[in-house]
Picture 1 (tube, one colour):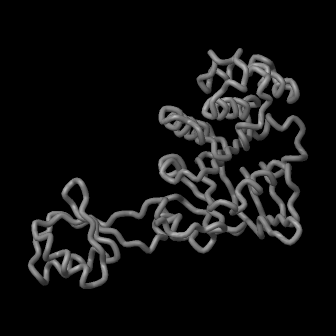
Picture 2: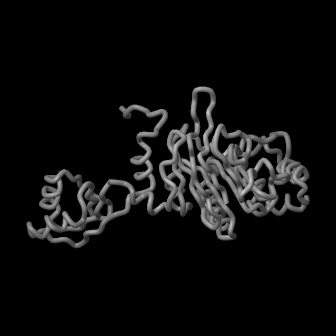
Picture 3: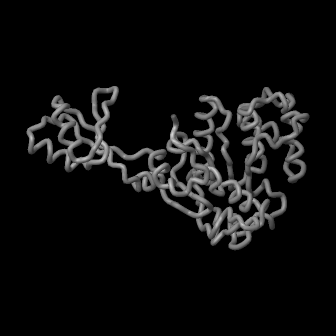
Length: 303
């Protein structure tokens, strides 16, 4: 378990994280989300003791991580897949980490096989793609068989098969009772991977709740409709400020009006309905809406 209480980090006049409090519990994959510059990496570095907080506390299983000797037995972390010595082989890199943490050398071959890199053990890292470096970084987090795992943008550079593998692997680790925290900007992947979310913006907590509950906070009302009276229904709902978008499967998505009101309009004006079903907002839609005031570097509209 990871617990942060009133966590604050300042760099001179700049506040990267301000009174951030959250708990990451074991047994589920927790997504760590926020716009660029929100303070995600700074927070992860404070969890690992790489940055010291200006105020507040952060503990791993009840103790500051920096107080633990041989850290890989307690926490496995991937912060930057490129932060490796390119002249070493994959096997040599992991062996160095294992020896420095008092871990048996046999773990090196075991974790390389676990991430699908057994055949690349003798290759130099400078010849690896970013996706291979990500797999190597994930292997390093597993060396000490730790109960807590942190991943910062681990899906960058992975091909579709690698993303699918990582998604299942993170869930497997959580199912084993571990604490798994994954920072990512890939909303669609997080929607299929995470069960819990911690969302921050400009260093402050926006949400700490289940993915489903977070998505439900979106104010965008979307309803899937099927009707042979398309033109009449479209005129009725647009007259009340809603928008209508045709879908490839022959249905229509009405945005901005609840299903109850659409049903009332259809009944009053004798519009035949074959389907009327509310749609849950996607994680990406909810994220964009709920973090729009926390975007640090907002681009102008595309021309």
